[in-house]
Structures are given as structure tokens and as C-alpha cells.
Amino acid sequence: MRIVLALGGNALLARGQALTAENQRENIVKAAASIAAIAQKHEIVIVHGNGPQVGLLMEQNAAYQEYSPQTTPYPMDVLGSQTCGMVGYMLQQELRNIDPTLSIATLVTQTEVSTDDPAFANPTKFVGPVYTKERAEEIMAESDKIFKADGEYYRRVVPSPLPKSIIEKQQIETLLDAGDVVIACGGGGVPVCKNGNHLTGVECVIDKDLTAELLSEVIDADLFIILTDGSIYRNYGKPDQAEMKVATPAGLSQFQFPAGSMGPKIDAVCKFVNSGRGNAAIGSLFDLDRIITNEAGTLIKEGEGIEYY
Image (tube, rainbow, N blue to C red; front, side, top):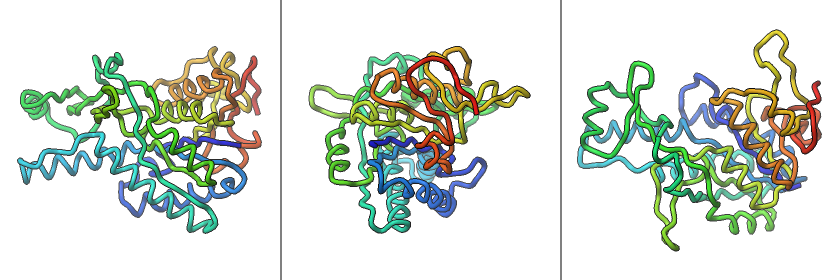
């Protein structure tokens, strides 16, 4: 099967962990073990998150500018490409360490967005360091950056537009046809816009799961898997919670899922299933081999209703 795996942030950094190279590598070793176990039997594309990593680079940029005001911070598209190389390098190395027979390639991938996307009229995605209200207002007066209140502090907000196309689609397919495990579209891809054939980086954040879904469509994947904390649950966290074994877009539409966590993931898997190209699944990274056989996680397919464990 041709499988697209979307790795959630927990695959790179556990909640509350310090963002050190050592902690990231420790988690990536565990992720690599799960992926390597299926990589010999299937064509695999890995799409990873990069939110904490980009956030750290933005904080480092801001701190250095205090020391050297003439050194302007790097734009977000450049920081995104940096993290694609960093995380891809670690994944690529640890996959080879587990199975030296695997051929693995990391591809810095550009994702096209439209500057006409409504998201650009209302930036909502918090990024980067925190500031006082006074300092945020100073920065806004000196630049085109937008800040909003995030608790008691202020943080920069950027748009989160929908992915429109994968610029390196052909290169990803070429690598898959050559038998490589491909690490691509990291962080949702480096956001770019097109003016004719000219590409320009854009200051925004693209949802990783939506890019992974689009990639699954354009390379004709058989299965799209979002790897996160676990399965889809009915009434998660309540006394009557129930773990879903098999679900359908029609069945899931009867429930409300949190917009900040499971909601966007369910939107992404339902979109892929509704495209008619294949099935999707949501589950734990450490159950990956069993998710593929529908022994763990939640399988999403066409049809009606919900089946529980």
C-alpha cells in the first residue's frame, strides 16, 4: 500500500518536555521504530509537525535582534525550511539506524497557498515569543506584524490558509517509485504563493494534517493515517466515553469534536475518504502496525454508522 503518515507533535516532543535536541531525538527514535516496522512492506511518506521548533527559532531570532538590531529576524517560510531539514535529518538517521537496508530521503517541500484565502484577512494562529502589550504595540507601529492578546501577554498572529497545491509532488512520486521512504511537507510545507511561475515565501502557518490530506490525494495514497495520542472517542473524557473502531464521515458528522484538537484531524480524514481514493485512520504512533490491520485506532471509510471496540 501507499501510505501517508502525519506525525503529531507528540512524536517529536512530549507535552511539557524541554525543546532540546536530546529530547527530540529520544522521541524520534521511538517514532522511527514504529515506522521502520512497516516500511519494508509499504510505500511510506512521512509528514511531520514543526510548531515548537519554529517557535524556538523565532524566539532565538528575537533575542539576537536585541543584541544586534540590524540583524532582522528570518521570515517564517525560511524558518519552516530550517526545521524541515532538522527534523527530517533526525528521522532519516534514526530510521537507517534501525534498518540500514531502508532508503530514505528528506525533501524540503513547498506548499502553495492563495493570498486571496480569507485567512489572510483575519490572522488567528499564535506564533513566536510573548510580549507585553506595550512592546507589542511598539512592534506593530514599526512593522506590518499583528499581535493579539494570548492570556496576560501578547503574541504575534499569522494567517493559516488552506493548502492549494504541493509544488514538489513529482519529486515525491519519483522518490517513492525508486523505493525510498520519503519525509516531505514538514510542518505543512514551506508556504509559498505563485505569481505566474515565480514563487515567493509567505508569512503564515499551514495546517500539517490538511497538507498531508492534500498530499494523500495528489499521490493517490491507499491509506492516510494521522498519528496522535490515540483513537477517536465518543464523548471523550466523560463517563460514557467509547472508543471507535470503525467510523464513517456520515457517522462522525453527528458528533462535535474540539476545534483545537481532534476536530481538524477528523475534517482531514473525512475529506480524504470522501475523495473516494482510499481509507483513513487516526491512532497512536505506537500502534501503527496494528492500525494498518484495523486492530487498533479508528478506521474511517465510506458507508454509514459507527462501530465501537
